[in-house]
Image (cartoon, rainbow, N blue to C red; front, side):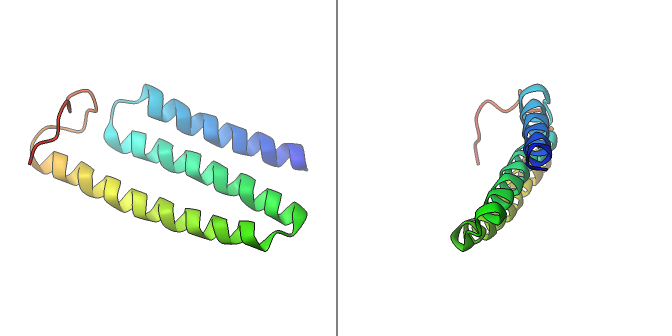
Length: 98
């Protein structure tokens, strides 16, 4: 069972990493980062469940809140870039000006 969990987290993390590296759209890159954070959360929950670690579960709750805040900030930045008319390609953004 443990190898199944670790394999799933490795698959999730590698899929997120591939999305961040290979995709050019900002939304897909943000989704890849969220997948990597979800993989870390799954691994931490499994580890904490094995050793009955309450502090680790608290760290997972903080990581979930951090991932939610990161997605809100990322989506607001993507919307701001879209409204500026620059498109959603990551290569077209060389500098951010107000």
